Amino acid sequence: MDLSIIAMVLIIAVAFLAGIEGVLDQFQFHQPLVACTLIGLVTGNLESCIILGGTLQMIALGWANIGAAIAPDAALASVASAIILVLGGQGTAGVSTAIAVAIPLAVAGLFLTMIVRTLAVPIVHMMDTAAAEGNIVKIEFLQIFAICLQGLRIAIPAAALLFIPAEIVQAGLNSMPEWLTAGMAIGGGMVVAVGYAMVINMMATREVWPFFIIGFVVAAISQLTLIALGALGFALALIYLNLSERGGSSNGSNMGDPLDDILNDY
Image (cartoon, rainbow, N blue to C red; front, side):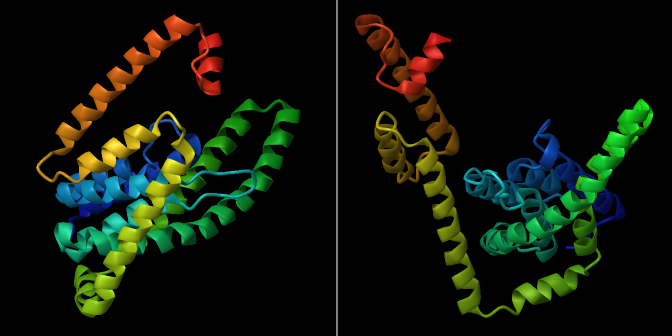
């Protein structure tokens, strides 16, 4: 679909904020669910973009910076895949392809991240010099400039995608053979499964495995809506908290979970 000038400006603004939030973590604009939803809102493709954002969010939950290892760029993946989904004009049918496209984009975004962080090194030295001079205004200016570089890291690729005519994107997606489209859909589904597995690997303890099992079983009932599943999860959480309090009052402060014991001590 063709986008208006206003929609393009708003998309670039969302991309800029997503890039900034990648380092600030203040309003979470870089999270896939937020970025894709905002792009869907400004382009009139809210439903398909929410589905895309929600799916990418489950994948991105398993991404984390550990030591010197940098996680894939969720902001670039979210913004770029949402733009491709909108320009493709396939609606919810194009979500699987967008997810398959998002993963390589997330890895490619690491290159842009390294470039921006390399540029930030001399800026830090300039700030040190300004600090030695007692020039607070210069320090603030350099800080804002460095943060804006993070925004441009996502805004420039997003603007480049927007200048690609929608007909070319649609023709490219429509020219894909069925075996490639089906393969990308299967691959996208497998990536989502890997994301779930990474999240479960981080959260799984002996205490929560029964809840995972209940969730997998209940999710197979297609008549239940997301609201119903959320209500069940909320009820199970209340039951767990109630039973935990009773167990704690009967046998002292030891709950059996070292993390719970530490939190209770605080």
